[in-house]
Structures are given as C-alpha cells and as structure tokens.
Image (cartoon, rainbow, N blue to C red; front, side):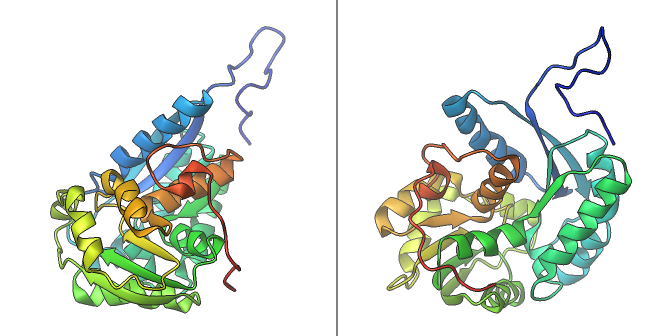
Length: 273
C-alpha cells in the first residue's frame, strides 16, 4: 500500500499534505467531463480553500451505440489500473450510459471491478460511477418522480429511463435529442437547455435530470432551470461531483450549480434501493 500523502516517510523527508486527487475514467471522445468537473471543483476551492487535481484514463468510444459502449465497459479494469498509478483518492467512472446499457443495477458491479483493479495495483481508492451517482443522488433527494433530458438515440434514452425506473423512481417525462456522435454531443449548446426543459412535463416531479449524460454540456443552465422550476435540478456531472465530495468527506459549497452542490438540499423520504 502506498504511503498516504502528508505522512512522514523518514526522519528527513516529509510529504506535503497537497490537494485531493480525483481520477476519471472517460470515453476517448469526451470533451465535457474534464471541463465541467474542474470548474465545479474550482468553485469548491474558492469557497473552502481546499485544492483538487484531476487525472484521467481514456477508453475508446466515438459513437454512442450499444456495441461501442460494451467495448468501453470491457476496458474499465485496465483504465482503473492506469489512473490509480497517480495514487488518486477517488475514481469516477464517467460514462453513464455505458454502464446502464449493461442492465439494471449494473453500476454496483462496475464500481466493484474498478475498486478491485485499483487495489490490486497497490493504490486502493474510493470509487463511484456516473450511473450509480445519478441513481443514488435521486434517492438521496427522496425523488420518486422525475423528468429528464438525454442526448441519446431513442433506444438508449429508453435504456436510461428503464434503469432509473428499475431503482424505484418514476420517469414522468423524457426528451431525447437523438445525437449518436459523441463529439457532437459535446458540442450541444447548454444555453438551449432552459427552452428544452420548458417542454418537459414537470408537474408534480421531485427533481429534474437536465443532462443524463456526462458529455452533454449543462453546467451553464443548471441554476437557471432550477430557479425557474423550483425543484432540485441535477445532471450526471453534478451527481458525480456530489458523490466524489462525499467520498472525500467534504461538504458541498459550490455556487451557481443548483442546491445539491450548494449544500442546501431538503431531502424527502428516501426511495428504497
């Protein structure tokens, strides 16, 4: 096991306490997770003074299709081994639909595979996944009924909806944007999301998932949509951020990204897992 940072190694050498290290496993074509998460944690640093660094491993994915998603999942352990070489404190598996396409509850197995690979490499770390984080965060919010936006083709949009419903949460309405090319997903305009959200049937929902994809940009719209709707608005990225903070034992203190990351969530009755 590696020596924890900040612990004395000898009578003459001492390691600095340093920042928290966050490992990401992302699709090779990802262009959003590695921009939205650092911005979110910059806001956390601004509020708390604690620093964070990011370290990524990439798995091949160009088009969001079942075949390419399955191939990416198969590389999760190798990616975990690579990113754990940086002695990260937490690893986030950042491809929501790749995990959800494997069937209900698949995040638990994926997270275990990644944790085992990091431990076998001599660098154990806490592990989350965007798929698991989205479901668990909705449960944390006590959400029983949600509305959702995805960038996916209809088949994969249904996969995500079914996965969430498999966790005991009703998806009242969903809009899928039918974009297959993952680079094009990353080029979608987040400022279009408030208008898309207005088209959702949000009557009686407990939360809105504004982006059920870590590649679809959404951070610029989260606060605007939440202020307009008056219910918690989360995304795959903000849910993953929330779980990373929990794994590190840090209290959310971010501005402009919704009440979840402001540390101002009023939870309802938890939904059974």
